[in-house]
Image (cartoon, rainbow, N blue to C red; front, side, top):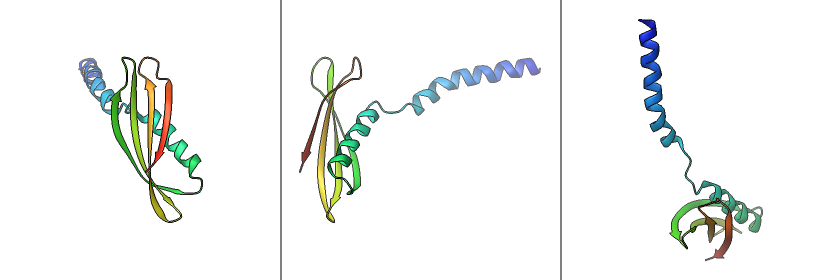
Length: 103
């Protein structure tokens, strides 16, 4: 009976593991979000980043996409909106370009 129970538990873990792995997987834009926030913090040293929002993804070419991120930074107590666009390759996950705009 213990052997049957052990096999049953193993099969349940095996079957449930695939759905769990998908649920825990990090979004693929997370790496580029960290890069974008690093750039904003570097350009606004000592200022507080009060809001961060992923703006979505656009296809730029067959191999490249552009993820956009919007940040709200408190500069001298006033909110400033900063848009960061990160273009990267889907094939090798390498950064192609980074554009920062103050709005």
